[in-house]
Image (cartoon, rainbow, N blue to C red; front, side, top):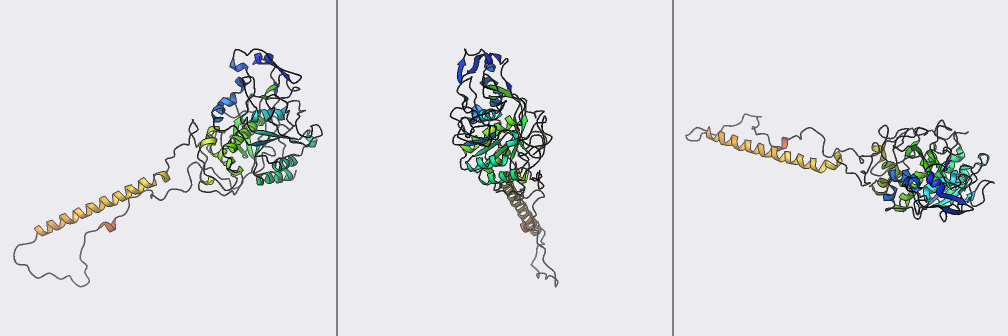
Length: 458
């Protein structure tokens, strides 16, 4: 069910931290703070610094946004999640009706909720990507009880702004595909794991369904994590190696575990989507997705590629860049767009390293300057012609013989007097016309007319 690799409990080095934090009957017992920051929960959250989340939190913390976590349930009593988890639902006989439990031996659903919305509050507390967002748990339970389609529909009806799907199953399912379309129609952003090579040969369902933002994993160096599945369905990449998160007591005595996988990367992107939705509350789901992929840092082959999708998620750019709005989900074939059509080219990083919008100096931006230069050239050419006419007339007068004027010669029938060429004969110099700029802004992304394969019966 889960796309994440086995989540290791923290029972070794960072080990000071192990000894420092234990869960006993739901109460936290803490020892003096360790000497090194790396030995703290916050110190092990390398992905927060790589994504510049502390800076992003000055702009948005996810307030007012609900993220549904469709997984194995969420242990709502974890100190990092207290007050963060809404009353959800359970589609499993093994999880209580509100989804506030996580019987999974790895604590997978709890870990995803922590990555998204951990409260933080100190070096020994887990800080989520969107710590003021709320988690809506949708428990699926054992594989025989899986009802992914039902979970997606319930989350959409419950008003989820973002639906996190760190789960996967091979192949396709028409019911799940229809549930995805239903949730998209309800205005939800669907984010799903692209799968891990240990268990998946191709991008699994629901990440392979058109309209879902499929997420691959990157390592600490920013390159693709070796276990991440690749495929044309990939939309974004995000940190997914050695990610620490909250887990229930059965999974780890101290309440934390470290894992690898596209599950973790998916939770990261869901958190970023929550930040965007909170900062731009009037932006619809289509344009949240468009903002995420248009501001991504391109990696791998230029444009969208099967290893990184549109690139690595760029949090500050997604929160600050100027991104033209689109009319249709850019992950769906045939989506139409407003000016700034994503079909105009490949995506570009719309921000510099500080997250500020980049300045484009394309042909369209220079059109007024080019037009002025052309007009100046016309005026100069006209002036040269006038000077030549005056000089020629003066020279002709000097050649007229003295004496009484004779009769004016008549032009032969049908003849035309010779006039020097005037400005009306000027032709612009060769080169691009000032109004010939290609339509759409630089930095659009290519449109794949074929698109990913549609769902087929299982």
